[in-house]
Image (tube, rainbow, N blue to C red):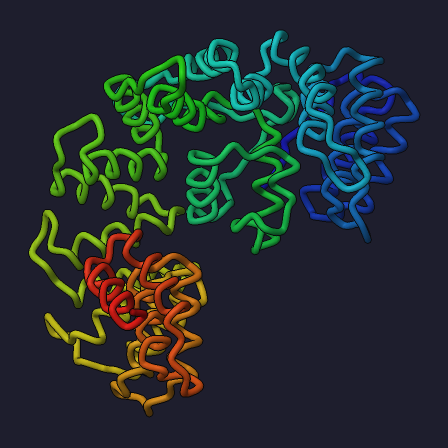
Length: 463
């Protein structure tokens, strides 16, 4: 990545130092760059304030980040030079909060509103997402999506400039296509501010080089910035239901397809889910799979991987193929610890179908992982194994512990299992009809039919 800045023939005071600072950024010498920017600031250079503020905000080349120092520099640029991008930066830092900067939505919104009224689309996007009032949100979101200048493909950006100033051209010709695509994918489904970009929990920030490039990309102004995200939010407004509005699936689908056209994996996934569930459209698993595959090709959304695996697992829209399902579920859990995916893998290994060898040990491991991630039925599966001695040594204490985990997570079958343990006196050697009845009642309320019969049996024993 390179910031291209050409000095005028007759530069203003501080411009030479600004130019030298930018040269040091291009060489990733951020400490040296900061020294030049601070010299330039002493000459009264407007954009040296922004560049220095970005370095303090990011902490690149420094021992620690210093958001309060960054805010003071951005405020100076806003006050002394009426720099509207500086207004946006102050606004987003206060809206989201940062180290040493107390979060204040009203204060941050006031700063961003000034920038938005001056035409800064990043500020408009953040305001559109922040407002809970439907009309206010729509007002700003629609202004951003007006930048969608290509009805049949990706938005044509043209040259990209930092801070919206044509003096600072952002050249990414030497950046690997994989990195550019990764950043674009992330920004097409998530509203990423400079503050969010710098948080360590953002997946893309695991690579420092990518994070540096992404920060400068976020600080640039281009037509495609946040358009797909705003289209997603407009879709969500139409699809949500509250006391005043019913879902408008036609409008929601229209805007989801707009976002999908602009490279949003979340847009593709959301369309697939509407078809899979039959929400606002006729249920169509084939169509759902097509949209899930589009989202998968774009990347960046692990849930897509699970949805494809789930269709293969159940044979919905495709011929059932547990081997293919297992491939996608495994890919999912390699990305994130997902209880549902682990649970499905457990059932596949337990049944051993479609070319997948039966493997009780792997099934147990997957059920245990699923239970750790909050899947009640998986805890119940393990409880049943220990109670009956299925492929494990019979252990009523462990059976009780696993049933209890599933029962407390609301699984009716686990609640039934606990009831049988207390009824039979299988754990600690004592029959406890009261506790058995307690768990059978909970299981019955949860819809497990056999529990109703057991309630009658306990009542007979009480007589």
